[in-house]
Amino acid sequence: MEVNGYEIEPGAKLAGADLSYADLSNAKLAGADLSGANLRYVKFIDAELMGTDFTNADIRDADFYTADLTKANLSNANLTGSEVVDAVLRGAKLAGADLRLTVFESSDLRGVDLTEADLTGAELPFSNLEEADLTNASLRFVTLHKANLRWADLTGADLTGADLTGANLDRAVLTNAKLTAADLTKANLTEADLTGASFWQRFTLSNKTHTGVRMRNHCDMFPAPANLTEADLTGANLTSAHLAGADLTKANLTGANLTGADIYDTNLHKVDLEDGLEPVPATLTGATMPDGTIHD
Figure: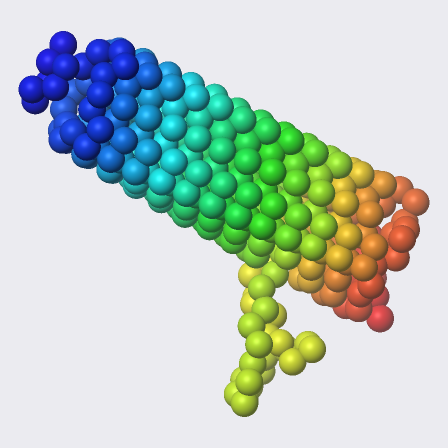
């Protein structure tokens, strides 16, 4: 198969090639070198791309529907706006990739490397990210509805405004993650590590007067707390987590570790605590307790 003068075959040497707008549906390019290639608007529908090298390639607005990208290397590639639906990317490398507004709906992303990748506004509903590495990734306003993130590493990830409704975060690591305004309604966070995670944002105010703004420790709390309604936090580690203002209505915190956690103004109405808040969080002021009373 020849396209634009390039031979399309397994192991092909196509580094830096211009294949923009090409239709490579059903192409067999396993192990090929497409590093630095121009692949804008290319159709890779049902293509065999196992182990293919896409490092630093321009793959904006491409279509990878049902493609097999097992162990492909897409590090630092630009896939902005691409469709990667029902695709297989198991064990693929996407470290540092630009994945803004990319659609990964129902794709297999088990064990992928997404460290420091930019997934701002990306859509990953029903995707499988079990054991994925998302360390320091930008997941701002991403859609992860009912996604599987079991054992995933989200250390330092920015999940501001993320949709994690019904997501499975069983045993996931969210150490120092940012979850301001994130929606975790009915999410499963059983035994997840949320040490130092922040569910609200604060901005230091210097030499400024903000009339009517609630002040605490000289900071203005951004009025967009996380929603953890009916979330399962059984056995979760919330040590030193910033839960101020979060909605934990009907959440399950049985066996959770809240040592040093800040739950100032947090809604704990009808929360399942089983044996109560043990150990006691550092801050309970203003929290709505399970019986509906406000803690002094």
